[in-house]
Amino acid sequence: MRKVNDKKSLVQYAALPYRIDDGHPMVLLVTSRETKRWILPKGQPERKLAPHQVAEQEAYEEAGLIGTVFKTPFAAFDSVKRLKNGKEVPCEIRVFLLEVNHELGAWPEQNQRDRRWMTPGEAALTVGEPGLVRVLLDFGGRFD
Image (tube, rainbow, N blue to C red; front, side, top):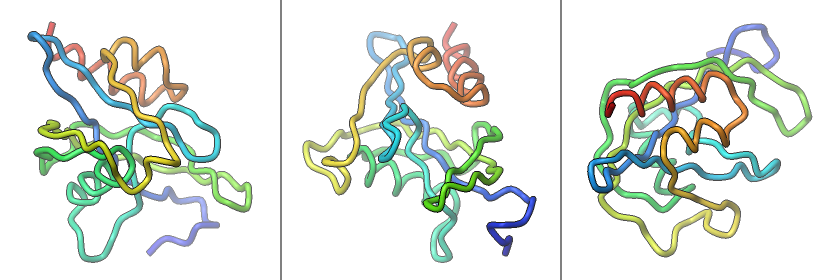
């Protein structure tokens, strides 16, 4: 296991929730709790869950989404994880596609986050991380 204070990256597993509306892809982003930046639902590895299951669980907890998660990552990008003590640690985000089947009206973190559906292009303009911009545009490009 990697120590948080070493130079190696942490790993997080993210869901890229999507649906198809009239033949056009839509993706869902959530806000982060502290800074309210638009991000993908994501979380740390968990001992009893496979990576894609972590992504699926985070989509439920952070956005109230239920769907079919792909077992292999769609993409990965480098990011920075801001720790509660203010330190920043390099982090690799592995992204799993989640085809949304159901959107709940109530979910565990509904009072801590906002969620919003948008086109991949709109989402790319909304997020601040270059790696996530690329992932969103790559996803949207699959439907051109």
